[in-house]
Image (cartoon, rainbow, N blue to C red; front, side, top):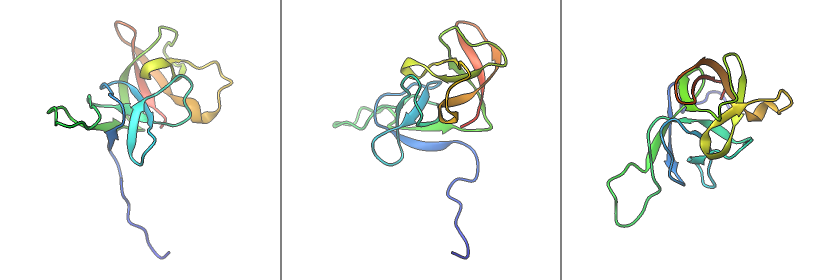
Length: 130
């Protein structure tokens, strides 16, 4: 191949919601191409953090977005934490698209990013590694 076309050079990537997602949730790959759902605990298929809310396509149309932009590295985004993560900690996905502090034994595919700042109400600002 003499050249390639870059599909996404920078910025967020848009995905179709396979399940309802909320802005700020860690999301993982869905079962169909370019689809997402909230990440499960210790997921190894993380694609980033949803920027907006989105719901699956339904009939009749509900008026709610069916696609969500997903933040990827090098973004720094607010994410709900289970309360275990502090500044400097690596984090992995917890249940329902939240994050939890990594124990240090996780495979690289589980690492979502590093906590840069602890905000209020169990929200942490995470520098994404995905």
